[in-house]
Length: 212
Image (cartoon, rainbow, N blue to C red; front, side):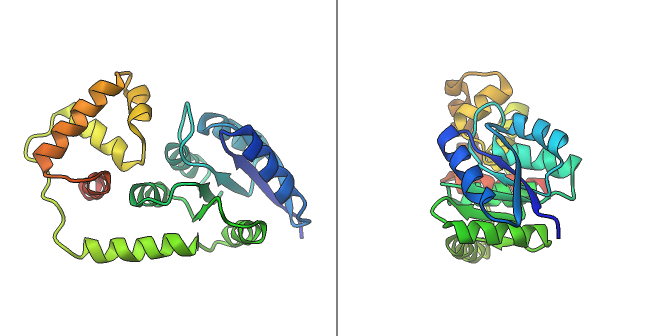
C-alpha cells in the first residue's frame, strides 16, 4: 500500500517543521509539502496532490476555514483535518461547516494525529474528545429557540456576519473587506444590537441559519 501523501499547513515555522518531521517518521505517511497560510496551501495542494491536508485555523493572508472551503470546492476528494489550539464553538462550527473532516487540538499526541490522518484518508470523520463534548453541549443549547434574524442589517453588516460565521477574527475580517479593524468592531456592535446577540457563538449560529 502506498503511503498517505500529507500536506502540513501552519503559520508557525517551528510547529510546521516539527509536525512534518514527526509525522514523516511514520512509514505509512509521506509529507509531500508544507505551507504557512491558506493561500500557499491551495497552491501546494495543486502542486503536490496530497491525499490529506492537516490544516491550522487562524493564519495570515488566508485563514484555515476559508482555505478549507476553497480546497473542498476545488479538490473535493481531499479530506482536511484541522489541527489548532482553538476549541471554541465558533471555530469548531466554522471549520466543520467549511467541510473539515476532522478537528483536533494541538495537545493531541503523535499517535492520535497519525490515526486521524489515516481515518480521514479512509473517509471517516475524526473529532477530538473535547471537541465532541463541545458539540454535544452546543447541540443541547441549539435545542432552545434560535435568535430571530435581524430585521434591518445593512449589506456590509451581513458581509461581516457571514465572515464571523466562517470563524474569522476581527483583523482577518478587516483585511478581507479592506476596511479598518475599528470599522469591523463598529459593524459587529451594530449587528449584535439589532439581532440581540450576546457572543460570537450566537453570531455564528445566526450566520449558519441564514445560509441554510
